[in-house]
Length: 157
Image (cartoon, rainbow, N blue to C red):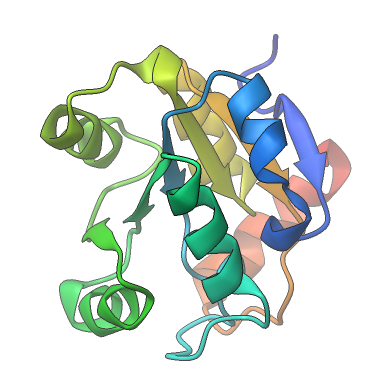
């Protein structure tokens, strides 16, 4: 499998049913924040995200935000959703993913990475050995670097 190909594709995170995760053997989900849970830089989650998080928690799945953003950005957003987080995770490198897995005592095979970017979320999840769920970016990009990455992503999506 190509390192830039997800195992699963969904339009938005709220389209991923808890049953999808359970049937894939997922015990912990490593979640991207920007354009997956909220608009880029927003403090407000997308509609349905708090309910989706509550549902997967009820099923015994641990959700953790893994973000390349600063703690200043992610901490209040994660707190609002009642989630643990790893900021400055350096995706697609494995540091942030492994930090979360070690904290909760899970192996990569127990995890899913959910996000909207090929070169961070998908690549990092595949390098980790996780089940990878790609979502569509649901908002405009405000960061110049991400806009450039999207140009290179387009033919690969």
